[in-house]
Length: 430
Image (tube, rainbow, N blue to C red):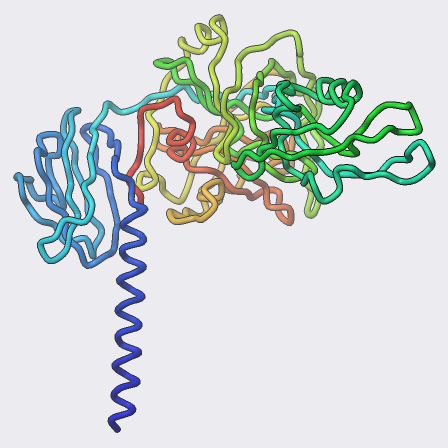
């Protein structure tokens, strides 16, 4: 009996310790600053047996429908609502047993409005350095097979420098290696870490030039959809997901990039098991914006002056928070013919507030008969098409269900905005 009680006590202690460790880990990752829109209700669900106290809270009107005073304490084991007043700041201290654990700044800002677009664009990205796709061998002067880069360079490596020379593109790399006379020390970025790697080029029997035996890429291009324009900053967001290298499946690091005017000339309809595709004619001479960021939430940058002036005249809509999105009817803006953007009916079928992949937070279905007739549903190239509901921009299309092209995923617009670096807005985690 005593042994059984001891085992129960140990198990109880392990459960409590594990829960406490998990709670403190979650709290440690909680952001130290939250940006809220003014005159709005925000919802936060921490779900821990802790308390929050508010200080200097002139910008916060109510918490859980109760007018707030300095020092008021609120339990956090249940979802909490924060109602904001005009712009300003407040402070929230999270603690337990009278001990403060985290201090959170609440910045209340004017509501952000953007121009939803839905315009098809051509995209070109020049990588920051030269990306290694893989290594191979070649015949040496004596007929032997040489592979200098084998087990030294890895797929996804970015070659930034050769000795002290900056490498911008494939031509820079080839010319430097060919003209070298001994070992070369490369500065390589691998998984966000910079390394120095030394290689000995070898002479190829094919052309009598020195080579390192690596397949590389320095740029990529494609077609996508422009999601929104922010008139107050001149910034844009597009695609709703990052651009990955087609071979390594790794996110491309941007040295420079541009978006160009595009015209949709035909559509390959999507069918079950085979995604469709927009075929566009890109005017490479007509750059309408520059790209400075490629992240998992999309591509971001600034529009050129004349284009920005054109979009300034378009109607603006406020950005929706996750808790403002509802299952049911919505619309999508997309460009599937020429340069004409049209609004089509869709249905929001699912909302996952805690999706691990932010680009798959919303499940949508195309319901508009005209769009279904043209595309069969969601096709490649529609990524970034903005989604509207109740007068707000709520998200952007990101993926298609291969086995049912009428359905797909969308990213929460607040995720795009939070990580695009161009808009002063941040939503509370739920």
